[in-house]
Image 1 (tube, rainbow, N blue to C red):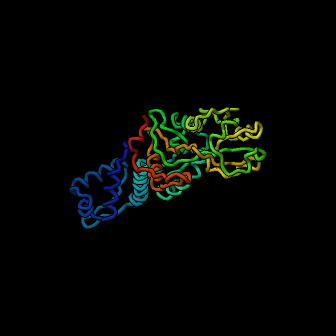
Image 2 (tube, rainbow, N blue to C red; image 1 turned 120 degrees about the horizontal axis):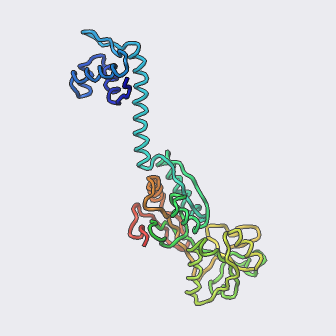
Image 3 (cartoon, helix red, strand yellow; image 1 turned 60 degrees about the horizontal axis):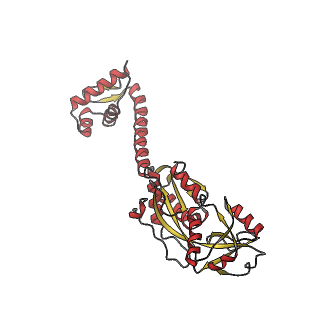
Length: 319
């Protein structure tokens, strides 16, 4: 016996069960009554049972029809739920998204964006990963995460990007360093100090911003060490009595043994960018919509507030 049912047969049956009349059910379904009768008979043959007891004046459900009605209603509810779920996923309102970020982006951009995302897309589950910008860019390229908020210039093709904020870099010294009691330094003073940098592969934009500022000042930098992460930076700054660099999003005293100082004339700055792949899933569009809705974001005190366009402009596609 062929028991492959079509959803339309369930719709036809439920219309008859509700109306208790073939003519009214046919009118409700916008089909002819003979067609409806034929389809109901085909359904009964497929099931091998009678669903309806027909008289000249009435149509009633048999015990089999009553039981079938309950299940048929649930099947149609499940089918509609499947349709709704697919549409929600396609619109970014359901599913999941993995988001990478660095510390400054998390403080300035991610928190307000996630608040907006949870309000506008409550069905979208998020996974967060904090790390340095170089690793985040690689993770986006390799498909390990969907979108990242990082320090970056224009990333390589085919990645897409939007600049969403700006962060200034500050100098980090140990509490026993001669500069520890100062509020700020001029960048040119770094000519006489050993400096510690994150390796360029770990944070390209920060590395380039420091050397660009040195070039503007016309001074050489004495690089005492290049390190893998901020923890190693702190250790080397204390051990070598050197100067490191961190975002101004961090507190003036990152730890009990370290002090942050403003850098002026010039101030090294890096762009905070959203980066994603061109073939990203719909959740990324939802994230970008929330990013735009949550803007403007706070930037460095001497910078204008950054705004996020709702659609990527020419800058949005990597060059």
